[in-house]
Amino acid sequence: MDGVADLTAYGAAVAKSVSVEPWSGRPAPRVAPAGIGMLNGIGIQNPGIDHWRRDHESRLKDLPVPIWGSAVGHTAEDFARVAEGLAAAGVTAIEINLSCPNLDGHLIALDPSLSAKVTSAVKSAVDVPVGAKLSPNAIDIASVASACAEAGADWVVLTNTIWGAGIDVETRRPVLSGVVGGYSGPPLKPIAMRCVIEVHRAMPDLPIVGCGGVVSGTDVVEYLLAGASAVGIGTVHFAEPRAGRRILREVDRLCRRLDVARIGDLIGKADLS
Ligand SMILES: Cc1cc2nc3c(=O)[nH]c(=O)nc-3n(C[C@H](O)[C@H](O)[C@H](O)COP(=O)(O)O)c2cc1C
Image (cartoon, rainbow, N blue to C red):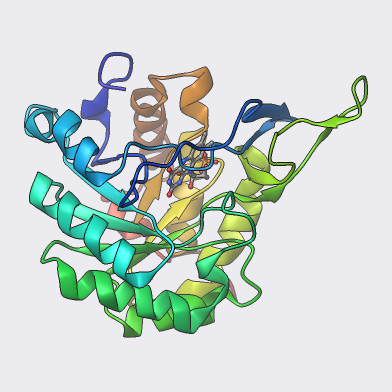
């Protein structure tokens, strides 16, 4: 992304999730448009942590933004091993991807005690701050967030993609090879917003990264008002790699219009009475 985006617009950039061993991901088709959103079923293709370090470690310090690593795996031990490798490579924080929707029904973030086990293993393995990335598919996301916080998560990311699917009417084939994948972009925003509101209500002191469908400065301010203290931006970059700088300008303009002196003054300040 460094070649196409303006990374200086961001507080941090989160690298693609990495596992212990290489994962080949799913066969094509792995992405498809769906309304004004996007379906993906990449299956976390990645070269494994050792190869990832060989490819990227020496370049991390030259990038104009702090890089966070993202760990994925099948067991708590996997997550911890990846986290150790990411921390040794010099990432400034680690997200635990408990919520990848493309691992054939194996969604850790549906289970509070399993999520806590993974979080605790990662926290014991590294000294850098650790966030748990959760799923909008969870029935009770506040319980999962609470379990992760008790296990030591420094923040939660709300949210990853939601399970989705589509059919090509010409071929009658699924638009993703894995049939079910993750749905992201603007239609995800109200769902992720609901998650932010529920978790912030239950745990007002737990930092939240709001994520899902952000395309404008207004979206950012909405997440902050709901209780997020930072915002993650993904899908919009496929259409507009330099979206970050525009969104930042829009936040600035909106804050001036709303007479908000410090962006932090917005956090959790929605009137939900
Ligand atoms: C093509 C694609 C690949 C993704 N890969 C990852 C990943 O490796 N790890 C992860 O935690 N989230 C991954 N995500 C989820 C995004 O980080 C983000 O949580 C989600 O798409 C919602 O935000 P958005 O609507 O701004 O994209 C991916 C999303 C897309 C569209």
